[in-house]
Image (cartoon, rainbow, N blue to C red; front, side, top):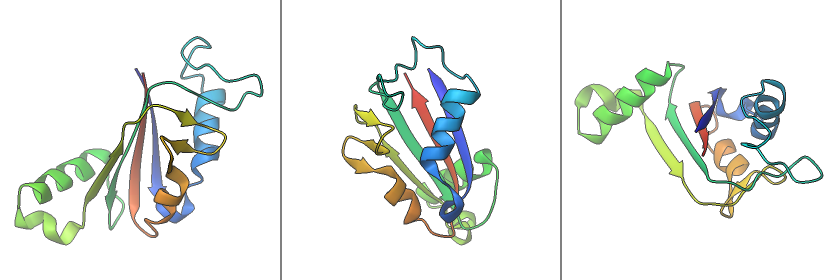
Length: 123
């Protein structure tokens, strides 16, 4: 499994550009792991997309811990405004940045000023 980690303020994240950059220019994947179509744009494999959000910049570890504290009712996490979302459906399209019909760019845009850690796992 290969993971792409994108972080920053949601409204400043250009998801398609970030994914294309990581996949093509950082060489995270061998050509057999990352099969583009003939136009070089689509990926149709098992893709797991998740993100942690917080109301201020933090490390991935802090966001994960903050969400877990919030999940289990720890009062320390209430002021941190942590969140988590995950999409684990087959059929990722780099052309449209959709996963199983979910428009990932719109989902990220809806987070506004939240600080996000986006993790994209390709199996």
